[in-house]
Image (tube, rainbow, N blue to C red):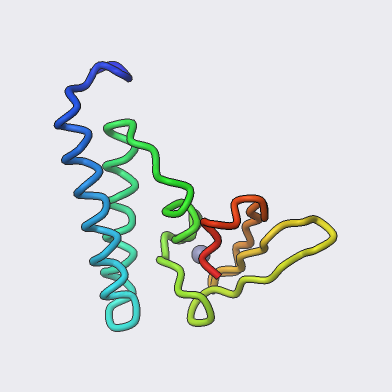
Length: 109
Ligand SMILES: [Zn+2]
């Protein structure tokens, strides 16, 4: 199916499934990190398959490189770079991502 050519209920179901996967990932991140990464990768695959975009908040919840769900202070460090006016999120795998500060509401730390 082409982009923008999908029935609304389908997208709603996909969004719901992504939400559920993120919640599962959150639950398992400390006990079964592997399982948690699997949930995130499933959620991302779903999003790609159905062209469902992640909300800005969800985009900041996981590492794009290794697929780990971020728990601030546990497997991710967030710091403010006031010179760049960016939040720097450093994952335990070493990947660093910058997010603009203007989206204050979606900063998870
Ligand atoms: Zn990572």
